[in-house]
Image (cartoon, rainbow over the protein chains, first blue to last red):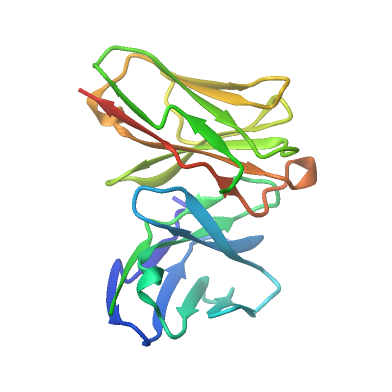
Length: 111
Length: 115
């Protein structure tokens, strides 16, 4: 299966702390994306990083990609209670193919 | 609001029945994707349409079918329903030309419960 795997499955932190989630995949990619899902709601796109990029920033989000290790990480800095959600990585393995989603990391940020 | 509309939001039905889930993509988006989300399987890709034509198939059961109409809305038909079909079904759309994937915009989903 091409499905990515996020690690950890669950993460609990305090407000103000940083949260790091990792994603690994098995075959080469065209791009990798991160999505957020609040409980029972639709997924929301956070950031896209192409296979020739190593790092990307968006506000408090920092994404890295290591294609040699077939892995990516999502860092959320200075977490807030509102960041509580599930976070999914999704891989596009060839241009134009559907995104393959991992099973997600559930982040809980307590105040 | 992603601009993708899915109906119904909730659906409860019995085993053996058939249901139709509807999706209206964002204005101008030609690509529509259907995903199934369940606790044990995660988010599974079912099928993709681009401008009315089937573009790719994923883990879609033979009991399931879909189509995209000329006005670009899409319907997912689920028949001979089983308990295991209970899940959240998402539609997503993309604005990339030529059917390239890019960023997906998801609807709020249709929660199907099969009793």
